[in-house]
Length: 321
Image (cartoon, rainbow, N blue to C red; front, side):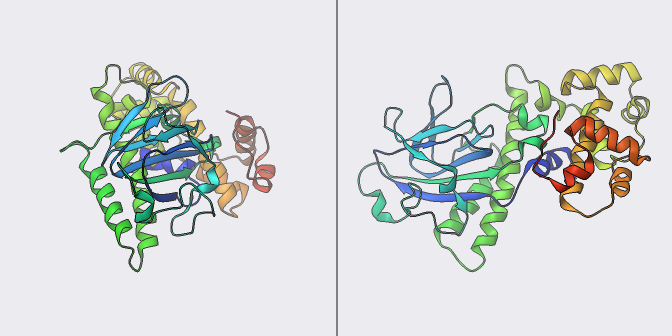
């Protein structure tokens, strides 16, 4: 897998959740803080996203996509001044399942849109394990607005169009198709944000790291072959730089020295293997680059705060650093 796919796979849990809702003014939802990343796609009409904190409201239109990766909570309304109704995380269900009775996101009938200015929305969430969050995702802003501009992000636009078509007339296999499209939508959203980052005033961090050919190549080597005995020298040679120049460039863009990042990524992979397989500790250690089970256990405990055996028995424990 590539670095972006790995970053998403490391933090994702379960299937995406979504609700398709048709509303007419006045309406307003308050999405409560949760351990998930939320998204809204405006299929018809327009609305306002009310970010957490003191950030100004964002006006979104048909075809726009809004992504809220931090789970801090936010509002969504026909107007910035409309009172908001709380939407708990349980209101977003696995697609195809009925919404809970009384859910403000449950009504998708045309009768719900009687009156002026109806809006058709797709509101959803991706469940995340914050203990495995890649620094790429941790560095994203609270609100990412991707307007529907002709010629911009064609893959994202195509995914939105396919979702709208599939939702309009449900046919055999729709649940599987929509779930797959929602999975693809998450990757397209993050990719679109990364592609837009170089045009911003001060691209930095992982948005810059994944567009830097040297650092991105080094990251790809570490993600594709995490068990190799990498050193700063061997990584520098693989990207054609001196040891000092490579270490400085990598640390500046990612915020971590190369081997510190490699150790962190190995521990993320080890945690995933321990909670999703019955491989022995020795086998897990070998897969993530440790020839000694003792050295692996020591590194794992330093990262997670518990021994790997205990972590396997209690997989809800999260990383300490």
